Amino acid sequence: MDRSDSSACNSAAFRRLSTLASRTSKNSAAPSPTTRTSSPTLGGPSTGLCLHSPKVRGQCLHPVVPNLKGLELRQVVQLPWKALEVVALHPQTTETLQVLELRWKAHQPVAAQTDHNHIQVSWRGIYARGMALTTGGGGHLAQPGSRSAGGVYTWEEVQSHCRRSDQWLVIDRKVYNITQWAKRHPGGCRVIGHYAGEDATEAFTAFHPDLKFVQKFLTPLLIGELAATEPDQDRNKNAAIRQDFQTLRHQAQSEGLFRASPLFFCLHLGHILVLEALAWLIIWLWGTGWTLTFLCSIMLAIAQSQAGWLQHDFGHLSVFKKSSWNHIMHKFIIGHLKGASANWWNHRHFQHHAKPNIFSKDPDVNMLHVFVVGEIQPVEYGIKKIKYMPYNYQHQYFLLVGPPLLIPVYFHAQIIRTMISRHDWVDLAWSMSYYLRYLCCYVPLFGLFGSAVLISFVRFLDSHWFVWVTQMNHLPMDIDHEKHHDWLTMQLQATCNIEKSSFNDWFSGHLNFQIEHHLFPTMPRHNYHLVAPLVHALCEKHGIPYQVKTMRQGLADVLRSLRNSGELWLDAYLHK
Image (cartoon, rainbow, N blue to C red; front, side):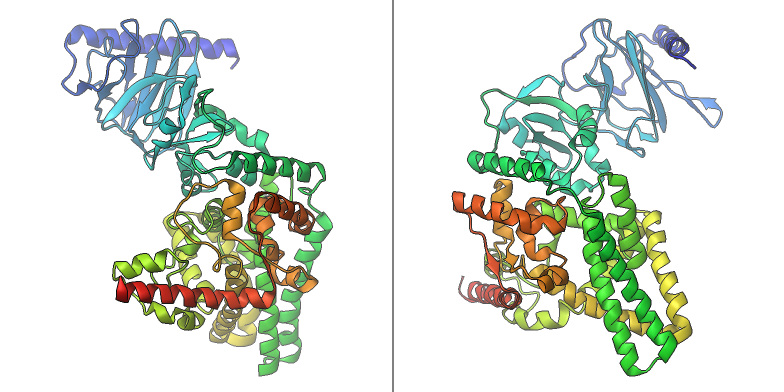
């Protein structure tokens, strides 16, 4: 069907709906009691609305509101239908009918058609209760509190839209309403929601390697821009630091530090597969003795840990130019090689990067009342007389419940629950392929029970490796509530580095350069050491501490910080 045929069909559909509205208006001169005015009209007397219900089980449901011809915009209409077509008329401008406070099954319109004087939008699965109708520019669904795309706003106005049901943010001085889009955000609704009511320019740039590609998703959400009198940054963000860091990022891009080496990642994947194969071969060839089984476990644990660092690279889109290729490899490595979920990892890990070491925003500092961390939380718990655990001994029981149980128990249960509750069948299939492969390889050698014990021991070793490497960069650092700092300041307060060496690089997956990784999450890890001197110089210029430790000091600081936090809690618990 060509464009002329499509316009004809649209016009014909519109005429049928208009005829229906005119007929119903003759039958009832007064509006239905199910309508009520929530605010003054926006469209004026020249604006008309027409609603038409589809056939449900072979029966055409008639509109509850008989006189829709005179219905003003921003009137609230309550309808019992499970599906709905809406047509908005505006003789002067082509404005789209939009919906506020709408509960629905689908996340986006399934059809949107327009001609010269009307736009027709169809939704499916609408729970039509308390539905507010209004107009707005852009041809897309409006969110609570949304305005036209030409609006001009102050930071105070933007900051007032920070609730879960009403979220705005700013990127490059453009104001976007993300309330409904957050539900469809590939990184999860929480990570983007953490920037509701504030400037997200630096985070947006850091997380997306292809800004032109993601810009098309932003355009429909645009509702205006900051007033000319408003500064580029909000709250405690330092304008000079922001500008210098942007310059540094451009310099890194011009020097090719965001280009990945295919050979590096191929070799890394290759050594993982070789370890997996050798671990099975030594058992198949020489038997299941204790020594060989222990050697097999060590090799599998090394492969699991290194696969964890490699999936981290693909998860951050730092290997391929095309995001889709990164996503496929990410699912293969974290799903088929580790038995976990890519989406679970994305939604959790990106929150950590967006707001590291910030309570209620970084899931990695949500200790479920088992530990108190930093200098603020222990005092708060102590003053409130909260004592779920003897926190003054947490540096001791950490060795029993932290490294041994995080991956085998907590993460494993959380991953399975998340995949099932979210109906993430693709990730579940990838995860099950890991267990199928493992059982096919090891049940003939160890039996079912022996294979279960082997995989548990491997994950026990992998969990120790993961916890110590990740916590030595973050746990001893500043952990606090939201302070709204600029990107550089926020990341440097929450991260530190471990000295570079060939072993440290391999052992930590180059996360010994945690500072550079947090500043440039899409940068290939083999380039961290090249950008590190530039970052260090920038921090010195602005007086921001840039911490580098030895591996031994980093590991010891994990226990030291837990002990200090426990002592702060005990003092506040007893004396405040």
